Length: 88
Image 1 (cartoon, one colour):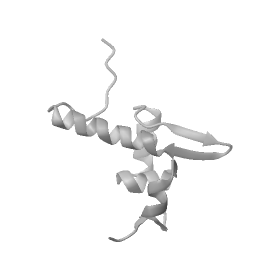
Image 2 (tube, helix red, strand yellow):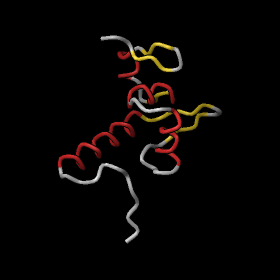
Image 3 (cartoon, helix red, strand yellow):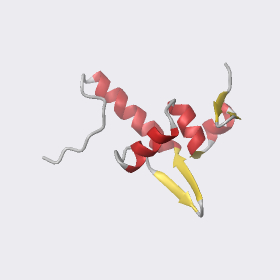
Image 4 (cartoon, helix red, strand yellow):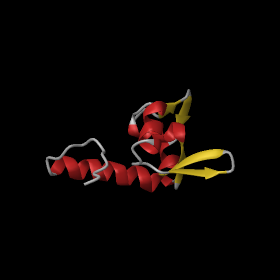
C-alpha cells in the first residue's frame, strides 16, 4: 500500500496509527478531506476536537475515530450523514 502524502510529506501509517495526536496534515490525509474542510468540521460543525499545545495544533485520533463511527451509525440507520445541531 502506498504511503499517505500530506503537504508533500509521506505519512508513516505505522507511526500515525500509534499516535494519540495527529497533525492537521495527517488528519486531512486520513479522512481524505482538504485542510479547509477539516477546519470547518472543527470550528463550525464541532464534530472534531483540536488540541493546542503551545503554538501547535493537533487532533486527537479518538476524535477522528468517533466522527467516522458516527457517520457509520447514521448510514446504518439510514439517517442523514451531514452533521447538524438539533436545537429542538
